[in-house]
Image (tube, rainbow, N blue to C red; front, top):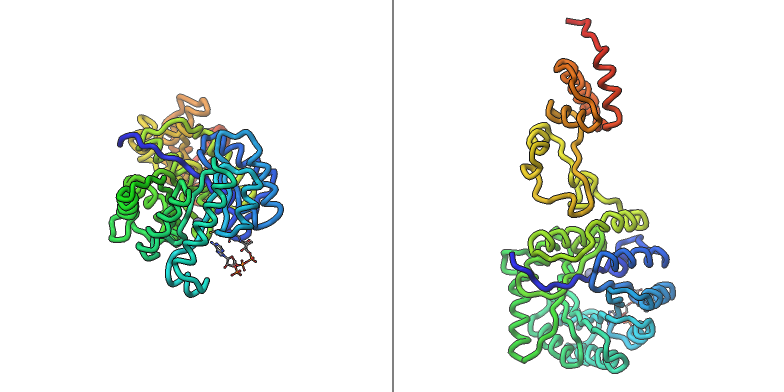
Length: 389
Ligand code: COA
Ligand code: ZN
């Protein structure tokens, strides 16, 4: 796969806080932002300043830091929201407003023209107040809204000064390879901008309701998207959005994108997990406890000789180590490998077998045998006598 030019927007502090019950204190937001900046994230969406005074103050504090990442805020198409965001001194502003007839008529009692007027007024105001501000306009629930409404509003937004148009799959509705896919959506939108000699950056915001957020984001990337939204642990409304670590892993491994400090991802995930109360699943790619642990004897046997037989990702790339778990799935190769790790060699084959028996017996009770237990298991196995024949 060739190199692509893609920017990453992390929304752990904005979308992530839309996870029910999740709130990061200001100093935790600062610690998270520092790690995101260190990892090399392009844009950090830090919050919606109109939501609470504390969020406003935190966004302002983060915008005042000398980060390499651009600090962003979220706003409705409302003068008050935009003024508060501008006052925070952010470099990026995401403005959203829906465009579907159903929502406009049903919820807002407005038509498309009213909506466009609100969007244009908001963007023109923000751009006039801060010409250097990067402005993103999101037609909410883009992919399920009437396409003619989306393109009309998006063109008006770009003409009013928006730099980025975000395609939001707000409900995780898209499925790669079907008639409703991100690749087709992005290519169509880009072509329609091209025809009008407009060239905004295209961002994608993919929700994970069908478990396809990352697949949809990659489909959008193939269609020419320029910015992908993600969050730590995929935190966000309902099933959340694209998982940051998984996204960075795929972009590094498949698209040859370099420059991210991937070895900081574990620290970031531990920090976010601790303060969100959302555990890192043990089988989570890259950051999960088991992500680089081999278990079954057949796997360990081959992987101990050459890990590539059972790995397609090198753990070292993420500052992680390969592990071999000892439990009822272990075989004699697993035992020999583990014994070597604790510096035990030249065991009698019968003792090795007794050690394996012991490990399988403990494993069957649902527990992994720690390496630190091994010397003691060896010692007891040496003294073990079978008295019942
Ligand atoms: N642009 C402009 N106005 C919008 C809008 C948009 N994109 N989306 C919703 N609104 C309006 C609604 O019409 C409604 O206003 P109205 O009651 O005057 O009709 C209001 O925003 C939302 O309703 P409600 O939440 O009851 O209003 P509120 O004034 O009590 O609170 C917030 C507004 C934004 C402070 C509050 O909803 C909040 O804290 N939200 C969290 C952030 C959020 O919702 N983010 C969504 C990200 S996709
Ligand atoms: Zn979202």
